[in-house]
Image (cartoon, rainbow over all chains, first blue to last red; front, side, top):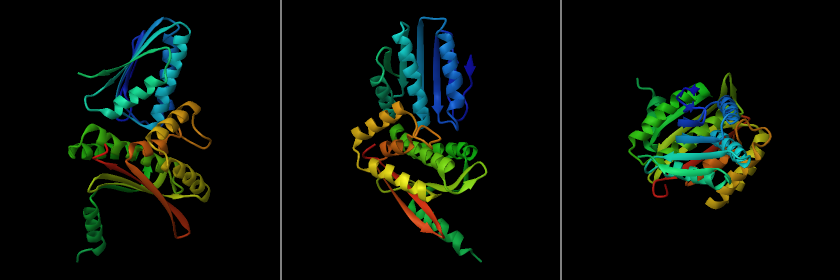
Length: 120
Length: 179
């Protein structure tokens, strides 16, 4: 399943065993994005024990920060139930703002493997 | 005959370094359009990604504040103005909108608290808010003011009574040296 990017939302791709979020995120109503994403992740995780989330964001607003927090919180809980979950947070060279944002989310997860990776 | 006010507006904007200003009914559709203009203008300044992200981030939060909370409502959002100017040290993003007396007290309390916090305290406030969820009456995550405080080098705010209504002025600076 693919949720196409818009001017203000990222492209979101689900592979069954993972999800990739790429672009910018500052929609009018974040729930229109968060609801289908959370639903799809929950569905996928009933079918697989391994799950990868790739995030490559260039900008997100404060409402979207709450969405990301909820996604990580959900995945952290899934990992607590025995799922093997990894998150890779990609950031651009010199993009300190997104690197720091990744580090802050990393601080708040306990059971998932959360890596930061510089885009080459 | 030249229109004096047109010339005054031009001179005022140029002298203040105001390269972007929108005033009037602001909706999410309008924000989508002006966002791409602002993004292009900021990219043209040749500044680093963190500087551009900070200015753009403050702009988006302020514009969404007007859309969601301005005391003067329009059909699809709120009425207000948002402007971005170049300063000697960087940029300033300014927003003005009408505000009710109830909101004035609430907003002023929140902003006074944020104003005295240092970076570590703002980070903690941001994380606490992410965990606790939005406060009552919020249409977003309740993070907007904290986000502006974190992205700006400094911010200020004031209220002015104007024709029986109160205007809320909210400004955030991004200094190049600090970014």
